[in-house]
Image: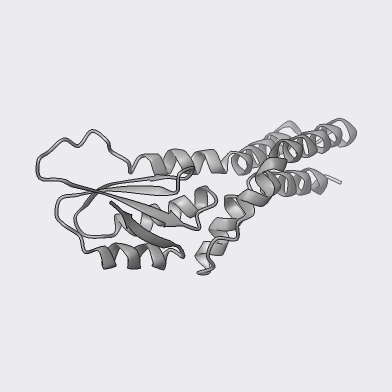
Length: 172
């Protein structure tokens, strides 16, 4: 019966963060965006409550040890907040305080991003390009801002975004 806590935590945490962890797993195998964010994000509050209720019930019903239950709760919280943690991690690559006459700023439209994992894939692929100083990808507008120290060929940027599984075109 002590495994019920782990099962509740695992399933609940994965459902709460399905737009993130499942998509990251798919990206590891080269599968593009599954669009889980648009499908499951409206139900995230429901998944949170459906995770808290069984965890609370199993705590009072089975009385697990405090260290065991604490580990389950920490595990569930890490899974649950993984989209927010990934967003914090990705935002460190956006530096808007670069003021220099030598930098080149280009804006791009990214097609097909639906979640934080999609955004992460685009950021990571653009960061690998030579001369990129900063990458800022906005998930809501599906736009990317590249700050570079030299002019990067448009085709190279498009290929980098395509390697992440998305389409891009330069905004004028």
